[in-house]
Image (tube, rainbow, N blue to C red; front, side):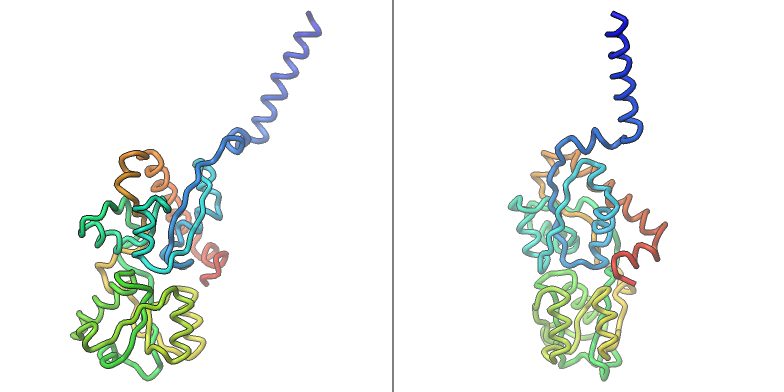
Length: 260
């Protein structure tokens, strides 16, 4: 009997020791919930999600995250409604879709202004000089499209009349189109805007100075809001945690992700 008690005591001590040296052991053993988030590009607009993934915040909350690059906002919204994506970070497109009666809602917004920069040919020195020019955007009603139209309107230019706007796709494609002479300007985020400057193009306008265009955040379907409120709450909490982490470790975090 004494020997049996010794074995029991040893087993309990071993279990306690394992929990002490590996507190995440139990969490890693459980099955993680698959989570798919659509992002327009790997840039500042999706930065909180990228940082949270790198820091392990999603796994700590029980998620197995997959970031999926979607060329523009409309396909992302459609994928969320269809259930192919759990969330999209295209806040303004989701808002427009919701106003048109589509079953999608923004559950959080990261910023009230986009981080994109209007990059143009070096001979263009003012927004008014864009009259008669061609600007490239990610897609119809994408963040870049809505932002460009708002800037042109506030500058006294009429979109699609004074300035031609063409849908091209992601930042890399738009930068290549600018370099190839197919367009005269486009909105770019880091690191693409910095690459454009090195090529000799001009940063004409910082879109963060143009308020009223929400950037980043999370949009999801009404179905998910009703059926999975706990998952939505955890996803929001992770994003907020990542934003706080970025604020406390700004320079180091930007360098790690190649944005500085």
